[in-house]
Image (cartoon, rainbow, N blue to C red; front, side, top):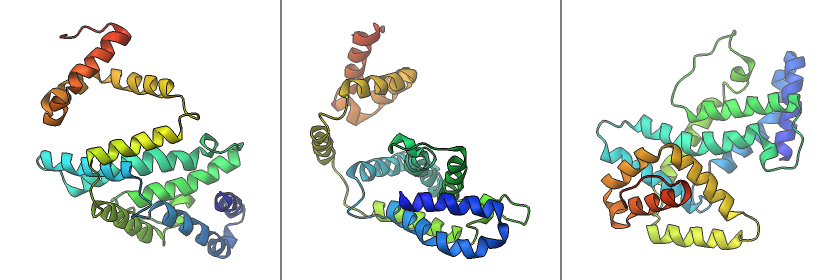
Length: 234
């Protein structure tokens, strides 16, 4: 968190005094590098859920024809870096008891944009007219992109997480946070999201052998019938 606050100050000064960009870049660089290394570190620190879900995405790519490697890269990027880390970077008040001012918000956006650029396969051509937030880490972006690629490759090479191991892990996490999380509220929000795509989910479950063996279609229909009196085939 300390590194982020230092980044805020430096970014603001850069906007006011462009001439000191080179000097301040050296001061800021170590903190940004540390952030990327801490986030994009594969191995034992990768949560089982991340390995399990990334393997699921790889499996889905194999099941469908003509799914390019870049597409799988986008799937993984949208599911974790974009949805979680970028969200936290731009909204630190989600997890910290801090007040985010407009200046802080703008500065965090610079770091978040750099992180997003590092996660994309697209090569951005820069010029003197490019936005300052793009130019700030123009030299480092190729290094950051490689870190993202290595992160995904490292996770892919990890030992697979079985369904049983995943269920055990989720049960342990649930027990650890029994007194801190409202399970009912979380389940309700999850169902609200699922209800938007109810028909599509039902169809996908009907077509999936693993889901069929666990009778997931029937279970979802029972939940829907109990919560919303949906018409089912029960």
